[in-house]
Amino acid sequence: MTMRAYGNSGVDRRAAAVDGAIAGTVGTLALNAVTYLDMLVRARPASSTPEQTAGRFARTVHLDLGPGERAANRRSGLGPLLGYGTGVGAAVLVTVLAAGRRWPLPVVGIVLGAGAMFASDAAMTGLGVTDPRRWSRSDWLSDAVPHLAYGFAAAATWYRLGRSGRSR
Image 1 (cartoon, rainbow, N blue to C red):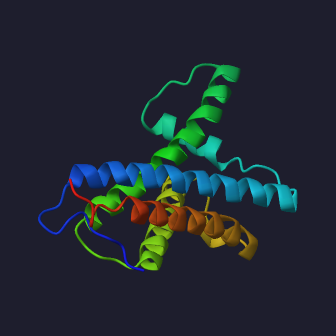
Image 2 (image 1 turned 90 degrees about the vertical axis):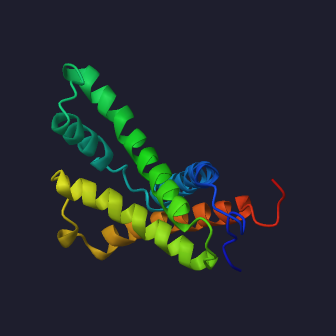
């Protein structure tokens, strides 16, 4: 199975970006579903890193989240929104860069999953929220498996939305 391109005569990057946003949304849904399934099966608590990342990000960009409980509530909302932005943004970037090329679906799945994982982990590391050098095998699996689910769900969606073979 190969990734279909956006037509042979020119590349519609806007269409690629829209398809990437749709694919990234589906991938992010898959990442969250796999994460919540892991929490259910292993009875593990939710990670605090999204909220910590949101708080550090807000301080870095001088965004006042308000006092006490209001700030905590805003961090609870901002953390997942940053994750959605990463998921959608990573897919848009890859689909725009790859538009007009034929890539095998497994390659796109791995590129998307690894790219989104790198983007989120690099941001959290840069903000001082985590240090992947100190992660256990279980920590790595808890991060890698949902990101691979993201990558393959996003890639399959992008493949399904591919425009080659369709008239415009």
